[in-house]
Image (tube, rainbow, N blue to C red; front, top):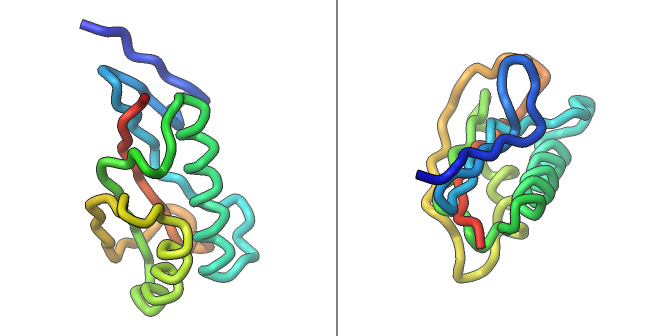
Length: 117
């Protein structure tokens, strides 16, 4: 059995866990809540890029994504940002769920699981 590697740990959670060639990301949320949906979505996807890169992966290796939106009126805007970010020919399975988020100023939270090289 291989070891589990955790990164960016806090008392309650870590941002990433790597096990058996798979990286699991915690739900990623924006830090700049003054941004609109497009800005928050771009910030979250940039964070995901950085976290995947740190463990030897990238967005072309995403196995599954879950996107949580408190308001589905933002779905089209989020999709426009997503479509410009996702690698053509490598769109992962994805679920988009309407959910009340822990911070009412967050417009998006994204959970990713990806293969590591």
